[in-house]
Length: 548
Image (cartoon, rainbow, N blue to C red; front, side, top):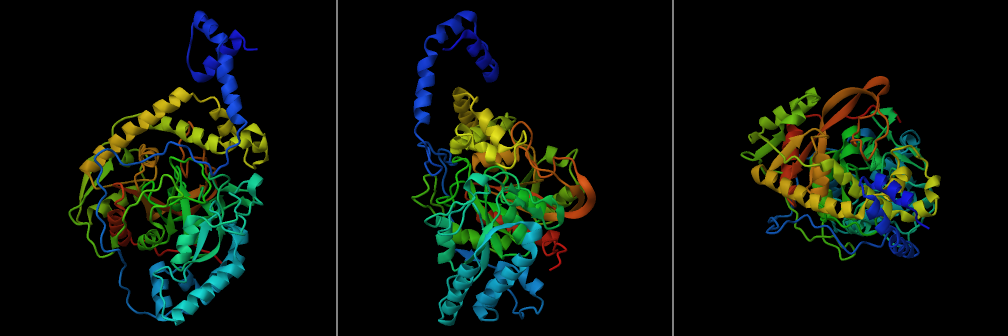
């Protein structure tokens, strides 16, 4: 039986205050509200069951930009396959594709080479949760057979890749990085797996994911940064970034809800593309936050992300938030005359020498670089919406006390976040959705003034704002800095960054990146900017010091 003191306690949790008379009036009719909630909880909703409401990043009046011509990659000068396997392993997808198409190397040799690197380095990096050795070799042989028959499926034909372990792979464990699901074996492939297979890519294994798509800790340990193995690789696409940076696959697939492609790319020095929300199907992937989850490539070069995005792009009826959008990229296109914006506070106190060097490099590209602004709004409040959706996606863990089986149990980990989310107000959640619309309008106004935005990974509110508005982001290596090992990320009232925790151990030279944001569904233009900046900075080819 409810008592007045129960309502008083609930007021403190909700941050509201009622009078004694108002509490008395509530007392006799709250029971029905509670009973309705309890009745719904008896219906167990699987992670695959989507909400009826869906997010669409397009504001009224939005017109889908034209994208013609497909993907036109750089024309590479003919050169022989290097004798050193390291040089082959770290070659771009574009270069590997040229060698494969010319018959200079086989997919079988390439796959065996990456498998050998995984066997040697995975015990140290913990970046693969499962290796699909037999099926990968079979797929490689099939790709080679097609090549000999004169059939070419495109630039990913015969290219081995790693897949974040939250996408279903028929007959191969997909454990979501979390103890309760570590023996989960799907009965069908995710849409992205089918698309990449149709493009001729070879699935070499499942890359590690921080438990339930957060951080770099999973049931097998902690995925490591190849540049400094004393620290984690950040997350949640932890294994995808680590494996790609270490040359254990040609490219990988990641997902982002709030930094899960860009953050590990920042730490590991990879190039991560978070596409516009809705561009790439999530069907067959673990849902964390239906209105925020996005799928994208993690590569070693900007141009490679275009080749991968072209293969995985496209609407899918199995993903209710999927949007049909064309994609085109011309590596020869210029950004001369484009208008590039930056937020002044991003290059003020706390900005590094690499940040300033990246901005100066942008100025040398023949574009107009101008200071811009973003409306002041309580962007950080939107994190409560993420926490609510995530808690709903994994409600059984909380209600059935299965959350106790997860390895990470600190204040900033999922178990505590899911429990706290039960006290979030539904009214506040609706208001957060209205705030989100204001954020969409704010970014729309900013991108009406500039074509691109450039800044550090943690540029003002952009990590939160652009994820909630659905805008694309490209993160690429800009230089190097010296750091000690950094601790795990946190979520909630504390900013999510790759370097917020206290550093420990000796300082080591590690990559440091820059983020580029663009207009909705204009990834082709964003990649033109990224490619020009990558060439100007000239640091993409530097490799981590790894010994096999």
